[in-house]
Image (cartoon, rainbow, N blue to C red):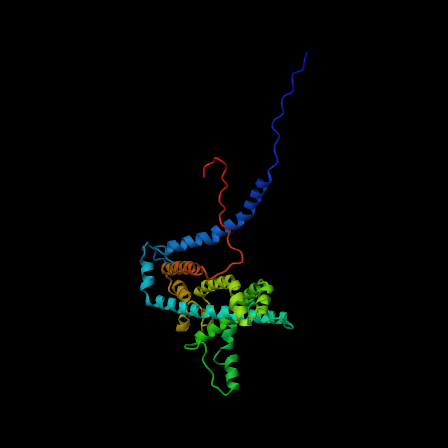
Length: 328
């Protein structure tokens, strides 16, 4: 008897393509971040948005929906508007100062001097100190009775000053902000070292002065770095929370001890949350600040056109190739 013909083998299982393996690896590595973002960012933001439309106090379960009442109160509350104004003035003063100071220090430590690595390290060290530690250190330095600042004044025969109250508290805060200028110095230094030396050498051969080389070559090429510092500096300054640590009593109940000149927008948010228990109103304050930051950032990007020069321009869209007899 003739044997039956063998059955054809099924299709061989193809190995996963390189593209599929890369896609699988991508999802495996991004899932932890996505879960963290949903749990620690998206959900809190959504919950805070919901709270901003209620009169929640954080304790009672009987909160009710109040619509836009909290947002109307934000723009009609004199204390909130005053804190926003102080925050804006502080931002307008400290952001240019920190950028200019960081740029000047970067220019100095970029010179071919001996032991410049040591100078760079010493100037950057204050920026490494945690913000809480820096604020508490300044609180001790400017203490009325035992602070080093008044100790130096006593040696000079000058009566001590109560630094942590008005009108001196704002200057202590500005000095604290400038004390951490090492971050800006490092960013500017990286930008300076990215500028080709041949450009300044060619300008020097053509008879340009050091000031002309700096203003017409260095600054334009450094404009993307300065633009980055402006954007991040404004966003950080509008969220300033450090004055509370310089206050006499940095606790929720002692928020009223913050000097009036340092009673910024985020201090008002802290007071509404933890001292007054107005979770709904405080959440509305935060969302208003978020909207302000978005608007300010958008305006900065719009106004920067023509003032920021990039070494590599964005690629222009290439025209599609046409075939003979084909449609356009």
